[in-house]
Length: 472
Image (cartoon, rainbow, N blue to C red; front, side, top):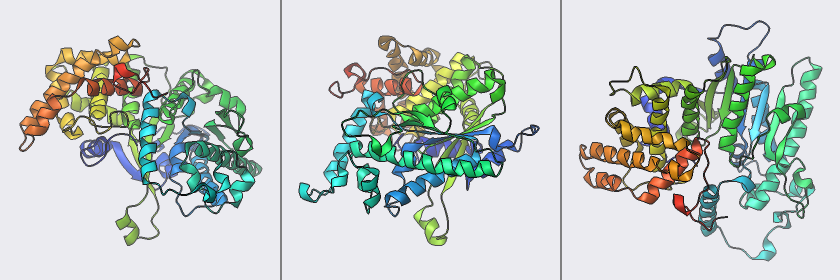
């Protein structure tokens, strides 16, 4: 999920061009200590108490290996990752999507993915489908299943499975916290954002009610969303913003200095980078809060063959540092690079994000035919330097009126033309350059909508934006 991958995609290109913003660690605790070792020590405050960890629950549960097939072993894998998070930071928040509040564009993408999955599924008669596949299964029935993984294939049973898993894990974490307290250690706080606390006890006739729950309900209230947020990726940023506000305004929160946002969804690159550049427009308070985007990655097949004991590691990105490197790159050909104002810098970052969208993501599918993100990244400095009027159009990504927000399409069209000219200077790219220059209005609108969405300015994903009106 996320942005188009490969060596020419956003993730690979950012690592290649700005390697100083990335570093790999065997675990988050090691990463935490490496980041905080450069800080001036705070009296009586240890590194765990200065750290928060925000985890993408969808990623954790979807990545449970097939070998952990029973309900107990499935929960054990999830519990281990959350326990490791609690060892890293004193505040851990696990976020989940909330289907009832997802944008129509996300529902369109899910419908497409479900149709693709159904086409590859083995068809069997109803009489051999296990009864536990029904959405009203109990935890006892779950515990008796040899393999709970098939429950993830259907969105209805998946949601109830996730609710049951997290209710079970929360009980185990509570026991762990009691053990830590008995040893005189701080148990920390675990919050779960987007599951129904009733777990498998919810009847099929009862409406699912996802909420903020966890080990400390007073803390949960602090992190409740003013308005529902459907997608977990956006929840991660919302919790970061809330923590940043608390650090800046509440003395009791001032010890927090670091937050890990852990997900493998590469959409988090544009989301986080837009957040960083936006903070120049409205600086918040005096608190310092570093943000590390941590991507848990399993070892490759070759690595496993060479070392069977090798485990997953975390590719960590300092998003504030990355944004600084990226701004330097974007303004490298401009005569005003040393005096660029915050709004222009944010416009440049919006241009970067929209370019990422037009090259392919969940909402633009494969992107404009012939496009490669590395070509856009190479051409962006020239565009920023020579097309100030077109660059200014990207400020419309923040407009709340759709007609005004769509004015950013003109800026993206000029960026596509600039990238086409750049591609034409390369051998064997004339045909692809023509395709990029001829980008359709539908692709321009979808890409701009996506950039608005990443900037937390969600529009209704309707036909005016190039989406299917029939998706509910």
